[in-house]
Length: 281
Length: 302
Image 1 (cartoon, rainbow over the protein chains, first blue to last red):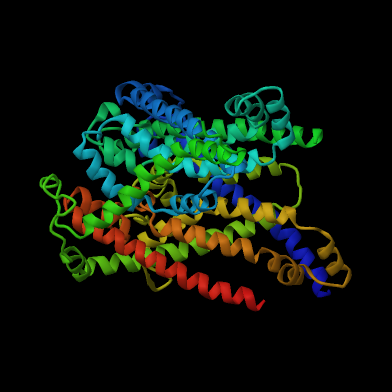
Image 2: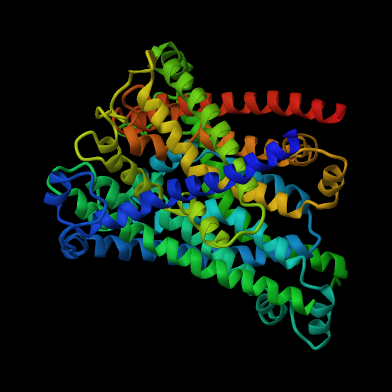
């Protein structure tokens, strides 16, 4: 058999195996997470090797949401994430428009600043912010945390939006200007409606950063249980012996699910939006 | 009244629109960075923080103290091993995944989506999931093994007669598992943008699949692989969450960022904490310069 035929045959076998292994390695842990969250802790201890629960129960979810306080944590996370998204967009839309369209002093240098912030290690930033927030009493407050998330996401979101704004034809904007639109009105009535998919992606990015973040939530909120985010709550309760592992697993489903659902919902919406644009143009 | 030209008007509008972005990054990133450097040269704790002003007593004590501790150098070595192994593994697996998923097949969309989940899922949730799966008492992974292994709490173990750092390897595998989707996404995008003509020509000329990979595909991927290496190296080198959540820095997995956190909170030694963070950042910058130099010149020669 020639080398070519041998290699082709080999890869014909290897490729499906690789795909299967990748699928198993990424999907199985999450399948296991859900399966563990719907059984009683006794079952897990008696038979740790079983995949499917013998008796399904949702008592774990009731326990984690009410007794362990995950409903409060979810409310906190939602406040932090939604506020971060709104303010991030409010700040980065004009910023991105300026970088995309307007010629001002320092326009080129701005990119360096953004890249630096994007690559900048959070652990270095954590020290002065921890000290500062302790001094001015912002520790233990959600607005302080939101402020940090905004600062960390804005450079990236400006960059994402700028790339999209540059694809909006300048002639459309000029037409709006001739029709008597001011700068702000042009952005609001012409550029933004044309940039919906990009706005969605940007908002989703800001939401994910704020919902998933752990280090700053730990540093700022750990002493205030009523202000914990879901991430912080799960990490703090994971160490305790009194709370059954299956209940905590329900907690991690509660933490993971919103992100996964949002991601898949918007991924489809995003590709649809992009392909629709391609057909027209 | 002075009349401004259109150009001046545009410059003013640009600055006005960008200023909220600039102000927030300056206030929350740039100024704190400068302050962190100042803190590293002062003897500060949370209790006496109000006395440490701008013109406080500057000293090199923090650096001499921190660098003299053997624990720091140990954690720096751990950080390096963790970063290099984690970066390399995540990129190699990402490359293999991208090559396997390059051509269409039924169910590709679902598999691709499933591959991305470890990357988008919250780190706290997946770290807890790994902890439970690897638990020596009731973890499902240990029910598959002949003898239970304490993956996350055991510093050293023997494997095939060799002594291996068990917990460190586990943490590295977690890193590879969680971040290979990142490399996968970038490499797949590049692969799909590649023109097919070159490969078809190579096939006609009798190149086998491995030869096509070696001489046609890989040369077009080097750039993205180089970029991914830099990005992953930078992010992993200063990563805190993953190691802290999995092991808390125990069992021979302490990386510098976890040490920085412990000095800041448990020991309440802000100066020493800041000093270690600065050293970490400096080492990172040195690595980046060396890398960009050697890679940049290699790129010119090509």
